[in-house]
Length: 194
Image: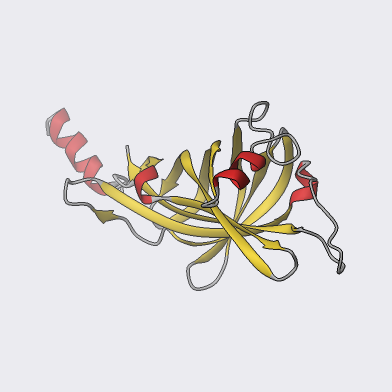
């Protein structure tokens, strides 16, 4: 038996791992959004257009999953230019000093029916806190029309903005405050195999 034949035979015995490895976030098919209570009666929603990230993942296995996402805070959009300008100031996001928000996964806890928790370090305004994203997805890879392999996931987390130094508020005459402390973060991400 030739060396080439032996290597080919050995390769056939190893499970295929073509879908394992590094996946890059596709920003044109991903979304980072947030919502917060306004004046105790409604919600303001917004999003960040600038997002990039990488995923280390083997399709079908959450073992050894690694996720690193960075968001450009200057791309905040709440459909109100004056509010967006205020959000960039020091009493909110302080974009001049802290231009990015990041999330780096440290652990993954499998759940039921395709759900899983991604535990990681969220950094906003230079303050890092452990946060758990409740996630779904990454069940299977699909092939796009150009031959690329893609996986997708959705995740949410609720954080307290005060924990990250986002402290601006204003008392209302009738009681309550202008801006709620709880922020719901939403991530819908599509990743392309590299």
